[in-house]
Amino acid sequence: MRSQYRSPSGDIGEGLRSPSGQSKQGANIFDSLWIKLLLVAAYLSLNISINLLNKWTISIYGFKFPIFLSMCHQAFSALALAPMMLLRSSYREQHSATITKQWPGLLAISAFFAFNLGANNISLITISLSLNQVIRACIPVATAVGAVLIEAKPPTRKEAVSLVVLVMGVGISIFEGSDTKATAHGILLCVLGTISNGFMMASIGKLLSEKLDVWRLTFYTAPVTCAMLALFYWKLESSRFAAYQMETLNHSMYAALILVGCVNALAYNVVHSLVIKVTSSVTTTVLGEAKIVLLLVLSSIWLGEADIWTPKMLLGVTTAILGFAMYSHAKLATGTAQYLPVIKGMPELAPMAERKEGSGSLGSRHGEWAKP
Image (cartoon, rainbow, N blue to C red; front, side):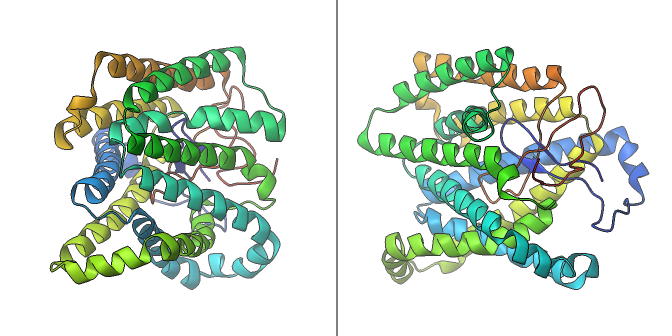
């Protein structure tokens, strides 16, 4: 099985071998340069469109129910995976034993992810997508702190320097962007969601003792995450959403936006898995960096965020991207780059996998989550 890996931006991915261990056939089609270019273009387009659509739906269209939106994404993920998980015997036969043994870890991961997902989407109401993406570029910082506290694994000197540069850039951006109470509230939620994501990545090896591929992990955690979010939805959004439904004449419009976002996320999961399969870790790292830059540019053009680009904001964002790139390439240089792309309901769910130093393949985890 091709390995699962996490990019410094926090995306998750997995290889394409079945649970029985048999490799998929017909991979030769992916040797074509044109196919690889199409996959890369699709990856960037789908990733960027997910973020732009979420921000547009919540902030510009005015569907200010981010918790409900997050619930829909999780419910759709579970329903989309259900046929494969329930009909294929290779998956079906593992469910009972896995859930019985792993339920504490699955519950903890669901809680981390529910907070991460909800806090990030709520923050989009009051902060720009540009600032949101810059803050979320700090996921490696949160993961590194979590690794120190949970596993006593400090970063290397180069990694530490790059993380300091990254924090400086994000700090400048936050200081420049926090000019209103509402924005400060959004920034706080985005930061807390980022910390939750990072600590989830750092602790997932402790939480799970059995190897799980990305599809099984999502199938198990998505319903639980949805249920956890439902508690907050009932308390914070249910009455407002009922009033919104009464006042809104065109229910099909927001329903269509939600459905398009869910399908977009599912398509991104599939494409991202293929990109991981046919490209190198260097390519995936560069794509992660390009994604951030493109999102910043396009959000300024399409979401009307150009007015936030003061000289100080530009300095902060440039410094943050520099730190992010330094960290990415420091990981690659040490031969321990940790990668992974998606279960993208927004934001990312991203566990850890280790690359053997000096090898062209990932280490003993073989694209699955396991306790070290």
